Length: 149
Image 1 (cartoon, rainbow, N blue to C red):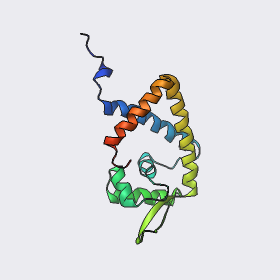
Image 2 (image 1 turned 90 degrees about the horizontal axis):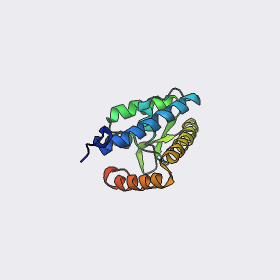
Image 3 (image 1 turned 45 degrees about the vertical axis):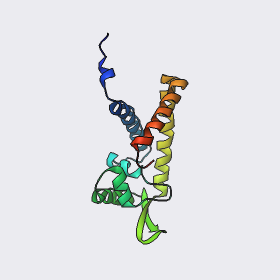
């Protein structure tokens, strides 16, 4: 029997994290280069969880696994910078939703373009068949790992 290589001993979570971190870094670099250089990584991790119709701060905090106070602080910063806005929640007059503002939509467009570019690079590296298999496997894994899917 041959001994496993160091890469073979890495757990699957870590192996998923490396490409995620690489994608995140590329997106952050491109967003900053496009003039949105006032967004921090912590802010982006809250920002990316805002749903199309808006999301409550408590839900953003839960999904980002941070305190409600921290989420509120990060949303305040994003709001001051013009990336998000707070609007009344139509389902509950006492609550407010965080919604992506036009400046935020412009930053999202840059991020999505880079995401597509990185995925295309990865597909060229892996080949279409392996990239499709990886996508299917990760989608299946999401069924048991993502409570917000």
